Amino acid sequence: MTERTLSERLAEWGAALRPSDIPAGVAETMQSLLIDVAGLCLAARNTDYVKAVVDAAEAGGHVAIGQAAPLTAADAALVNGTAAHGEDYDDTFEGGPVHSGAVIVPAILAIAEREKLSGDRILLGIAAGVELMCRLGLAAPKAVHRAGFHPTAVFGALAAAFGVAVASGANARQIRDALGIAGSTASGIIEYLGDGSWTKRMHAGWSAQSGLRSALLARGGFVGPRAVLEGEHGFFKAFAPSIDPLFDKLMEGLGERWHAGTITFKPYPCGTMAQPYIDCAIRLRAAGVPVSRIKSILCETAEGYVHRLWEPIAMKRRPPTAYAAKFSIPFAVALGYVRGRAGLSDFSEEAINDRELLAVSRLVSYEIDPENPYPDRFTGHVRIETVDGEILEERQGHMRGGVEEPLTPAELRDKFLANARHGGIDEPEALLDVCAALFADADAWRSIGKLRV
Image (tube, rainbow, N blue to C red; front, side, top):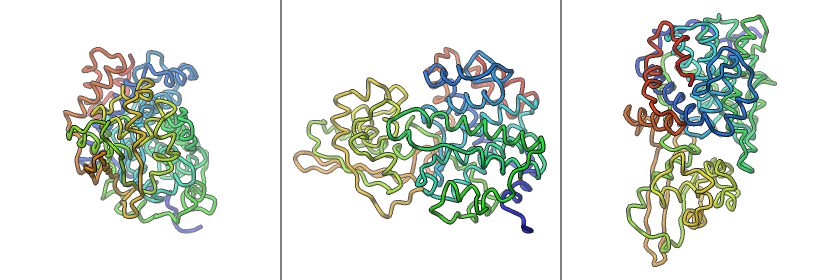
């Protein structure tokens, strides 16, 4: 093989990247991302699934946000990634979908403490990792899910390795090897959809620690395959075999066009594609039609949503666990219509047994719209027919929180504070200030320690 491989081209870009190369708008988005991830870690700090991961971790010198005990670097990345992704309230990407923050931020914070990095290097690593993760998502639309894998999990290992290597000043050969090694550490199946179990929650954390280890192995001289992405036995052959990867989407405009600045911040703590349906249902609620007068609720949807958010329809209409409810469009529609909201406390054991919510959820069905633009955009549609024939209908052609309808800085600040208080932090403003100042802090690695509670 004489031509440069894809990973070699990416590595050359990453090795040459400097903090001054990050556009101002991308840097602002990465600042919001850091704050969002930290708030999510605080929100989940006392949950049973985070406690289980902490109990399995080993003592060290690194921060798991919102936890008292210092952990090893890899375990801190695992805990932070699990906490950030656990409530499905983390960022997404219209075009992926991938959840980059819960993977990349924990990995970069871990290497920052380990290598005593400044704030501008933290920014650089986060931006580089997020950018690659978005581009990997664009290269294989729908195919990773179709193969039974979680895109955030498998793309995350490569993107975290890339971000860690760039942040720590690795050379092009080391970055290439980090990507090659990460191809063998990537994992994450989506069988959690079958019973609402917990494994998706740890996918982001697992990818964060896998990427960290891959980058460190490469720096130590361990060699990975040059053609990890496009090779005959490579990453896309394994995780997206149904498609010829769109490698032009992966590489075009690299360093000139930044997808990292277009990520979406979630307004609701549930599956990405369910969110526009909640907005539609909340708007329909304003008509004041009582549940007893509703005959049926029909939603147009994308074919790519069906196996994750619609089927098996009986289980989606009555989720077996609070976590399973996060991946049910019928339940999401019911929350929006009955409660006019969908917050952390609304995905609970109480809620999945609420008779009025279940009465609405049972009425929700779907039909596939062959023209739906997924995965380029995440859309919503709810059509209610009443018992006397009245039709009420709402559509939404994008996901709120993204480039078409971004959350304001005030909304993102309020989200952080609400998440921190949900996690039992009484005065979270000081923690917010730490996150807001981190990129400008020459001793940022020390300041990360202030996020320990």
